[in-house]
Image (cartoon, rainbow, N blue to C red; front, side, top):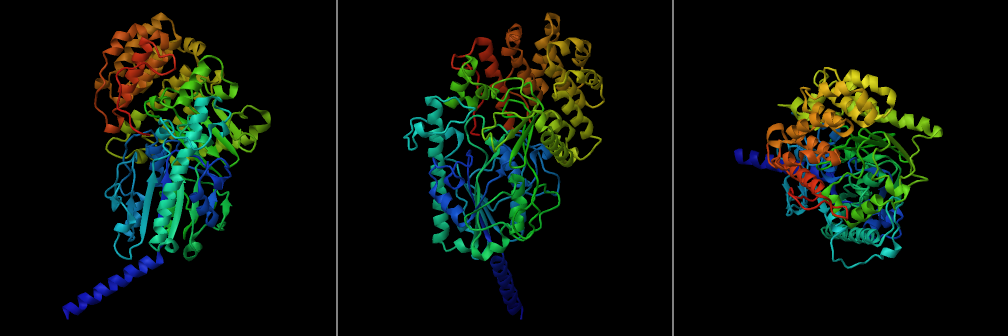
Length: 637
């Protein structure tokens, strides 16, 4: 009797498993790195991408897809969570924070529903994994390793188009550099043409990888049971694409194929060989894959499913962001409706082209920088290097696909500008954007918990006051100075931080007017207020101001005493002092390149900043690269 019962239960379990497999599609994501929609199916006649083109011919492509982040780690963080990283504190390149208790990464929901989930290459999330996420995540991971009849979700990622590969020499050319279209923001030189042509060669290589995965699926007899996505992780690895949250850095190819069996799960506009103008971004991918599997996305996910049982209405905007990029701090938010692209630069005193060592390894970056420094770059080519940046940028992609003609100041575009400005502010309030805190305060204010949770506590994070001050500080209007001085005495350190930055951003006259306020701020309880106050006095004050500012900056730059976040901030400030810093050269050279940090992912930033400062104090190479000095370990981005 007992044996018969066990056999009956086993048979019932098998039937449930078979039913589950029959009722749920396999889902395959074929991904690649660092490339924009430079593919034949997107109308790029220079590209050679027959496999993805064929997938698009029998499937559909999205014309208006953004990654959200213009660099890998925060982009993957967006994908895995269904949350905007500025809401979780995970926007900064290779950072590490926790999710709130009870939140899961989307493969965990799939696994609970019976899916076998495999990830073949790279995680690189800025979020601590809340338990086991994948059935297997390694170079050996494969859907073939699942149980018989089990539905699968699988990712295969190709790294062949990565930024590092477009500058690898020697290289056997396939695409002719003479036939490359050089965008308006890049100089037309042999080096730039070679980098662009090699980039196209590498896109062809990832297309070939996609073809192999599609062939393997067909040969296994699974093509009719599997929904396939092809996409890249962010824009091109060329400078002014990767790391910059404009359309050139955020737009990605997204091609989907729904076999006949699963066409009822496709977006309403789906048709073979078609193209969708639906606005989608990486924050939408987690809820979409859950929706395809018949799982209702949790309410806390901030994205919107664009396919499956729980498809959401089309959205009016897609959003992007940039925070710290390696050791270089910035705060940018971007919005698009598919035609216009809006960028809000909350730190306009910093140029787009801050020195990131990894980016300067690309020949295009060095040649471009030298042409700018020598005054030979055109106006469009100079935007990347200039400081200050415009606080607001607005581009019309229909007439300016290279995003070099800023419309923000033109009277006829004020209504459009206001619409995007409001959309950006509304999203910041809705998601409780903790990226408006200094990175160190993201960690200190959420100690013992998750930044997302802290961000939803107005006592710990008064976002309305902080955002309003960031907005005021970064608009660069002279009449904001009296209010900024007043806010230097606010009870919240992040308000005081933005107020100090606001004075710094306005330069010499503002610093002279607010001199007493800044001197008082040198003794502020928060290092993130002391540092911009000291930078303002050191950069724009007199010698007496400099003599007071330098010891503050050197003290905060000591990683062993101040912590990694204050050290990174202070070292950036010392670098900004330029010719005024050498008086502290001996103290700077004595600074330690080791210290405590919340995670090993932060440990290369201080050494690289120290190397850059050593190069500045000792003179830079004529090609624009920093002279060799102490280096932090480089890691592929």
